[in-house]
Image 1 (cartoon, protein in one colour):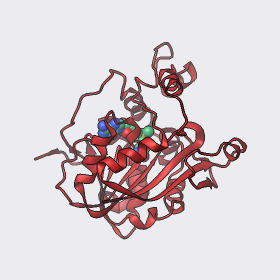
Image 2: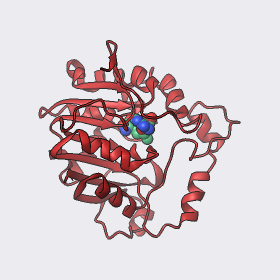
Image 3: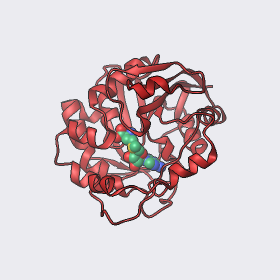
Length: 284
Ligand SMILES: C[S@@+](CC[C@H](N)C(=O)[O-])C[C@H]1O[C@@H](n2cnc3c(N)ncnc32)[C@H](O)[C@@H]1O
């Protein structure tokens, strides 16, 4: 039996944060952003407008059509993605599961109300852990994960938990970062050891004299083939797989080394490298 109050449910978390700073950015940002307009909250937290979130789902082949019935949003953050998708008539309900209570309590209500109005209840806010979904086996039609599963410390465990709650033939639409297959381990380590600079700390309302590495912030860096292996191990088959890129001269030159079709987005995709991978997966 899970706890709830008027605004959100509370599900048991599978594990405690691995570093004291793991969820610091979200906790601090939530307090600062919640007074702002919903579009500014989205730009500050996920670096993309709500409309461009929708456009991304429309541009990844098979993604928009996969979103229907009852679903779950893994690492739902400010509930921008959930709310934009819940506008679809075919969507009955989305459980938006986010670890950081401040984001759920302070920011999710703003996005839900501004985007969905009197249909805000279609998005069920949950403070919880994507490694423990308090939902029955085979109960959901779809799942979404926008830039969140790279925060998992055990991606196969996270994806198996997602697989468990999906119906046979259910879909997972997955948008996240991925590195080229030839990225050496030394480069992965270098990225994780990067210490955020003062400007980043100031922008995120943190003490500019603190030392925060990307690893401490809960980041992980996976290559294309590693994501493929995680999905296969967790019981998913790949229906569609594309690389999404902001249309910059650099991105036009740098091709992925996994032989994947690249889609150049007519807007700024934001985030690390302005490049993401888009998977549409189905339970095996
Ligand atoms: C880069 S943000 C993605 C934003 C989010 N999808 C959105 O649309 O606002 C990653 C999110 O995953 C959340 N997260 C990380 N680990 C989690 C976990 N174990 N369970 C649930 N959420 C988690 C973080 O708190 C953060 O809000």
